Length: 228
Image (cartoon, rainbow, N blue to C red; front, side, top):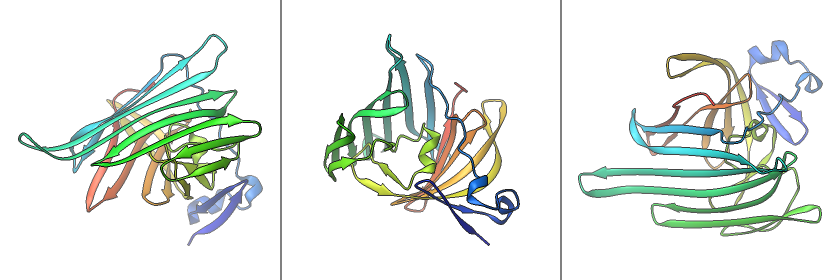
């Protein structure tokens, strides 16, 4: 049995086990976000049906004022000999100041379907110009790059691929253990439901440590190569 809990702008579905600990919305507290250090790298090997499919890498850089730049590079391919049967590319750059997204650029190529997004801070809004959406979004907007755990406490996210504003519901699955190299890492498992249902895991430092989803009958898994 699931119970729906409102938390700010987020909608959570709490399992029966979680209900035993979280009986009211006021008892649900936001975790401390992971604070990216200059030069940090999140490096995932992406598996398709258990075999390497490509990579998903995020790099973090801070300037002299402490402002954060996050660069995402995703490269996925399915090949049969010399023939490329499927190809996906995503390149995006996020700019953050004091924990707030102030700019975003992104380009994607999903097997020939291309998307672009550009967003920047203007006055008290994030102004978006993109393939899927043009307009203003609130300053609390978090993009779909998944590294920021606070994403699962939102009711919407901004696609870094196309600029689409995606409605999301989040189910808390519960405590789990994720293997990173030879290390067992305690984590919280969430299920994010949008245009695609995605499972996400964050450890007790709010580091993103795993992702998995099913598409076209195939299991896609992100395996973290090293803790960061």
